[in-house]
Image (cartoon, rainbow, N blue to C red; front, top):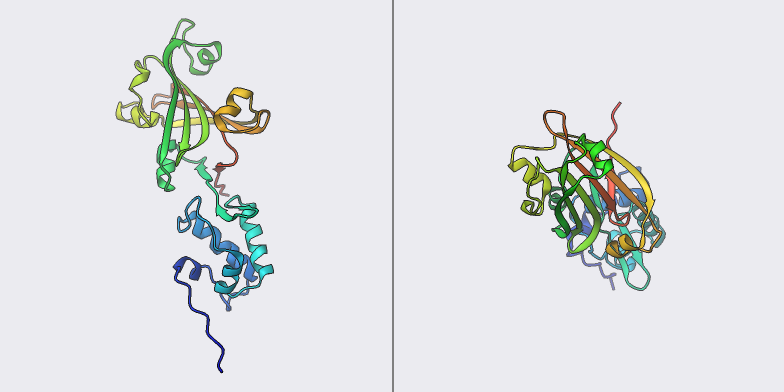
Length: 253
């Protein structure tokens, strides 16, 4: 009796991962590259579960060792996470390019996420000493202070505090989900920015907002944004949840 032929996969995403016999690259690297490209290209969405290892091995005609080496490589990139007893899932990482000024809202939507904002503070107040220095303000200046939690598909991934001179933003309540969108609409876009990165440990209050352990390491990004005339109009501190946020820089020689 002839051997039964395995049925082709009904999921075209698996067919696209099939290593090529004519490629001299090791099969696990072929699979790792194709899976990473598929995730970054949106074929596999954040939160999607990969098929069980047995199914992947059968569909892709590879050994369990080859599969696990490929998954190890993709996991090292932070694109998937293995949960014991549950399976392998696509992670919710947000890549934010360092070479362009793109708003948080636009970045998430381009990646297929639904952005969200939970306001903690929107008020006018006297500028602090650091804000006076960073933004070049007079000692008696007032600023619009905006503090919010930023989320992707309902998951909080960043705590953000922005300060702008009152002359730039006279009514902090006027800002909706996108500060940069508001500035663009009112003819005051941020056209250049300096960003400073520092690893810090979260305090109890911040840990509660980000659902992290107190004292855990987190990336603090301080940005100073400049208008067309070269005047600083924005000072923003963002505390980025490391499990969900990546910064990417392209270097050229």
